[in-house]
Length: 118
Image (cartoon, rainbow, N blue to C red):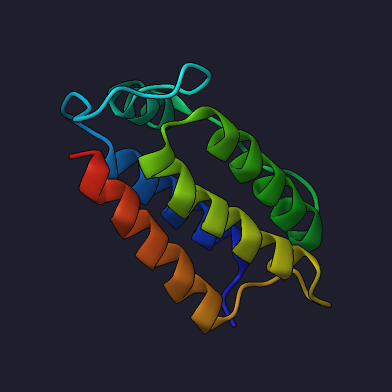
């Protein structure tokens, strides 16, 4: 099993890299959410760093992803919400360490974010 910290760095790096140089949104956002462009810029400047044990970090990441999903454009929020759900499962595990399947799920969702934040 892989440690959580490298996975967080990977997740953050992929979120940031995937959102560099975004394009304007194709549709107008809902009033309470950011546009796709604003969402990508926000993700590109997000500096959240979890602390504590692996379980603590997973719980903090899950909560952070949930908060982000509630703010950003729906196109970006859906994969982030799925990432929050995965991290909630990780936090609920006995070790707080991501499985290979969970890492793959996170990568797939990061790829979806990258499709909107090019």
